[in-house]
Length: 268
Image 1 (tube, rainbow, N blue to C red):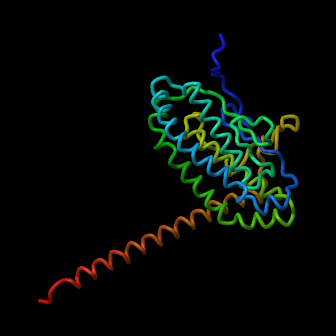
Image 2 (cartoon, rainbow, N blue to C red; image 1 turned 45 degrees about the vertical axis):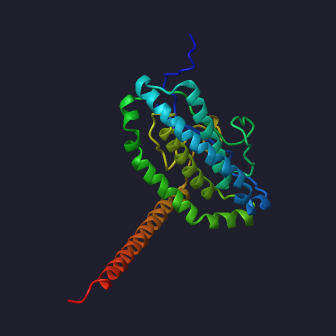
Image 3 (cartoon, rainbow, N blue to C red; image 1 turned 180 degrees about the vertical axis):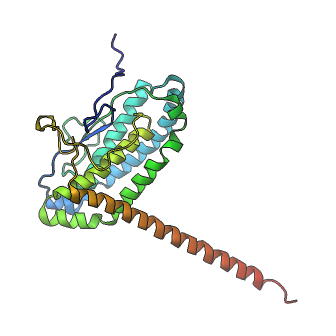
């Protein structure tokens, strides 16, 4: 009897037996320079829609968490909604990070769009569901550093793409690695998969006939791997500087409050 519930292990894009969410993005190609120039401006409506969807997904995930805690799976309706939101977010992110030139549609279903994800219903470990917020902390830190580092030098990528009319291969694969890791973290956070985010530095090579897209498998050369490490280091540096500035601001504020309090005391 068909239940829509596949409990078999699905090979990941790296050739292993563990199931991992898959991101399909076409190989880097020509991009219209005017859309590159105005990319983030054009995407403002998409950012607004995604912000609304994120709020809805947050509350739906809470409901799904209770359901998964007792049943070991997400209800079908919740799974479909969260998967659709994830696909929508991934399409917008791919456009924002210059991976594709095609504008994402305002639709959950976009079978003709070049950016696709594959997330299949998989049984969930109840204990891992219960501790999901704690378990995802390391991956959240890595993702935060990656995204901060990427955005720190995104203007360089933007200029290069604007001049060349395309994103060079190392920049493309390094950016795709960040996008895929982010997608896998979101899938894990929203209980769409029990697989922890991994393979940040790409997949193992596969035979030519098994190549599905520019990111399946995702193969990073040395330059791309160096860029990924650079993202992490820049993100770490940025967070360290921000923490230091916040600490200095708090210290100055406390010193000011102390001086103010002392100024109000009578002389002995």
